[in-house]
Length: 481
Ligand SMILES: Cc1cc2nc3c(=O)[nH]c(=O)nc-3n(C[C@H](O)[C@H](O)[C@H](O)COP(=O)(O)OP(=O)(O)OC[C@H]3O[C@@H](n4cnc5c(N)ncnc54)[C@H](O)[C@@H]3O)c2cc1C
Ligand SMILES: NC(=O)c1ccc[n+]([C@@H]2O[C@H](COP(=O)([O-])OP(=O)(O)OC[C@H]3O[C@@H](n4cnc5c(N)ncnc54)[C@H](O)[C@@H]3O)[C@@H](O)[C@H]2O)c1
Image (cartoon, rainbow, N blue to C red; front, side, top):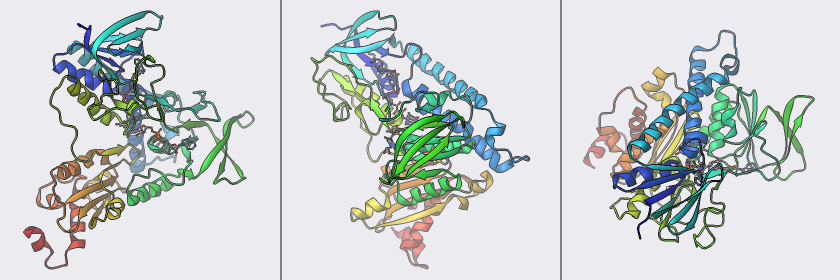
């Protein structure tokens, strides 16, 4: 049977966009259905990745400027800089990024339909636009890449004015003096450090006794140390009891209890940011006739080819759950296209890096020292403080740590953990060495540009080998390996 399209893609975020682009390169006819009638790009371009990074970039510049040149009148950044300027900076970046995405879509002859898509059967999608006009399209394959939305809290309301989520915080028109953040995942630390850089006093309410448990413990210690320096206060094992407005003091109040105690604590603030996780956008997305399997949280089950339990329907990006990042979604969208059209493809081999865009950034790949030891691997570590690199000197950078984890017997690199400027870029040097099964000798034997933060790899490698070898014979031994 002839269908209207080779593939219909629901959602124009990174998963949908990369599936569309790859499919056109296979000469396939593609339709993207996007529920947002005014813009393409999803959380990636409008609510998450790019807008938060644009704000971060501006805040980081302000923090650096402030640290290096100070303020003769002792003013806080929020007294000198206006949110309007930051929003304008973000807007300019988003407009330019938007144009590029639109240009790619037009250039590659990808059709778009604006409206909410619902899958009626294995090959049919119904699109209902904002005027309730309904149109039906058919395709050989369907990709679900409808992403995710912010979770709502159980016992208070997000009004998007005083109480914000990761979407509405992007519309703040002023830099708040005080911000209480409820939640302690990646988004919490990104926004905590962005606003702290602007002078906002930050309080984080975490419902757990630990944060970002996947981090190497020394990197986490360094993060906590930096948060302390920025006066970011964390209340552990906290449960929010109520959120209300104190009209008399013209502020918001968050009442919470810690560690199951009866003592109620109250934090006064200008705004509250709730970042307690995300939920997949799968509600009423397909007909009951279709047996698309989901897990207990509603995330779609997909195999290694991103195929769901209905063979003509694929799913990629946040709708399938972890790692829930734009980085992973781009790869998954492309792999889904390769699988649909029987094109050879390689799933990413080796370890996957991650990046957290706090200020400073955090990035890692491979095993932590703790995990490697638990697995019984004989490992040694090498460390470099950023302040020992010349780049840090010239950039006035005093914070940062790069840690290498390698096998003691053959110096093979099995983990890299970084907190500091450009960590999310730097990690890819470690990734390249690891994916080639290389050893830390790479950083000693090869010329690295100078001055760069990459020098930290060389310093950490020397620090590591110095632990392994005895003085006197060490360099001869390294060369003989
Ligand atoms: C604050 C924040 C910061 C982030 N920072 C980073 C980062 O620095 N690096 C990183 O890698 N990741 C980051 N992420 C995560 C990243 O944004 C997401 O993982 C990524 O956008 C998911 O891509 P996606 O294609 O699955 O969906 P999305 O980008 O969410 O796009 C889904 C699209 O589907 C549309 N849609 C929904 N339902 C329908 C329907 N029924 N019919 C048609 N269309 C529909 C939506 O309107 C939306 O446009 C961040 C997220 C947030 C919230
Ligand atoms: N750099 C990146 O790649 C990047 C950046 C931002 C977000 N993301 C992705 O977006 C997703 C969502 O991030 P997130 O930080 O919102 O969610 P998350 O699920 O990672 O973390 C939410 C945290 O909030 C806590 N929490 C939930 N409800 C709470 C409450 N009522 N009180 C106190 N604490 C509460 C949870 O215990 C959890 O630690 C993640 O999957 C993340 O990977 C990625």
